[in-house]
Structures are given as C-alpha cells and as structure tokens.
Image: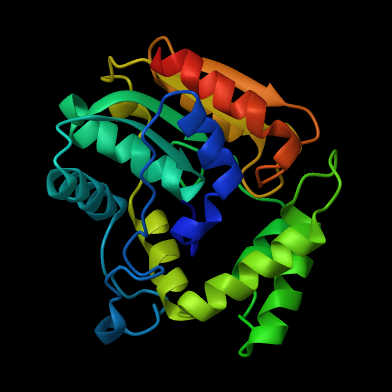
Amino acid sequence: MGLGAQLIHWDDGLCELLAEQGHHVVRFDNRDAGLSTHFHDQGAPTTGAPSAYLLDDLADDAAGLMDAIGWPAAHVAGVSMGGMIAQSLAIRHPARVLTLTSIMSTPGPTVAPPTESAFAALTARSAADRAAVMEQSLETYAVIGSPGYPMDRERIVQKAGRAFDRCFDPAGKGRQLAAIMASGDRTDLLASLTMPALVLHGEADPLIPVEGGRATAAAIPGARLVTYPGMGHDLPEPLWPEIAREITKLTA
C-alpha cells in the first residue's frame, strides 16, 4: 500500500473480488506502518539528514515476506508508494515477480509532481487524537480523491478510525516520504524488466498526476496503460470490478 497506509487500506471488497477470480491475496504492512517494524529510534526526518532507509529496502522486505510464507514468486500489485516498491521489487528480484501492476504511481519523485493543494494535504501536520484524525482524513480525500465519483465519507472515516486504533505513527509516514525522495528515479532500470506489466492511473489524480502513470508505462517494455476518467488518488468502489478484471487479465 501507499505512503503511511496500512494493509487494511487494501479494501476487503477489492481483495474479495480478486480472490473470487482465483487469486490468493496477501496484503501486508510496510515498515513504519501498521504492525510492521517501526524505526522509532530514527525519530522524525529532518531536512538535510540522510533517510533512514530507501525504497529498495522496502522492496527487499517484500521479498523477505515471500520467503517467510513460502512463495518463490508472486503477482505483485502496489498503489502509490506501493507501486514504487513494486517497481523496485521487480527491478531487484525479477524472478520473484510473475507480473507487475503499478497503480497511481510514478518511476521517480520528480516525475509528475503533485498540485500545490495535493502536496499541502500530503504533508499537513497530522492531527493528534482519533476524532481529529478521522476528520482530517475527510479533508485530505476532499483534495486528492476522485472528483468523478461520490465521496464515500463513511468508508473514509471508518477506515481512518481503524487505522488509528491499529497503529498511529505520523513520524513513520515522514520516514517513508524521506525514503521516496532519497530513492531517485527508476526509469532507466525499469527498461530491463521482462515480466508482463500493467499500469493503472486516474486521469484526475492531483497527487501523482496521470503523467506519472504514462511515464511508468513508457519505461517498462510492453506495459499496458489503462487510465480512468474522474479517478483521483484513491480507488473508488465502482471501479473495483474493472480493476480486478484488469489485474486478472494480466495474471492470466
């Protein structure tokens, strides 16, 4: 999943659709998110200080998880920062990635920069208590969400509350963001990939504009690009069946 997000941010409904189409779905917390390892001793990132880790380290974490569950290889899908991790996993461990699906992501931190309002929402100081965090999540998705689809306020609030109860670590999100910025551009490395690849992106994404998806697809030989009008930087429930079909078409 993406920046600061936990495995529960992969919606049950989307995972169930994938399972119904024959996939065995595993979702997990990246380091510094959810119930995974947190680098509390590193503190909050500061300007000019070296990043505590890179996206390559998160990709190696994913490969290590595959070792732990006994999977020699898998179909890999990632959203936003998760798409960047999936790209890095495919670059570093190509034999482990049967297919690659990169969703609302980009090959580098300077490709397709966010709008001013989306960047402000991304980097806003986190609220400190549960109710305020839930309200802040609504404010964030009002900026980065999908203007072509109704905003599911109840789902957003409930998920924010669950995430707060499960793990609340704003500094971890900051360390992940520092890793994104320190990891550089993957465009040239993506040219070495040979596995089937799919790139999904919203045409109304203000956080990682659609040019990020186009650049990703252009960098990976033979990649298929699918864009969705009205989709922002989230996964609207009405698109779940289409997203599941596209992934299944790729993995088949």
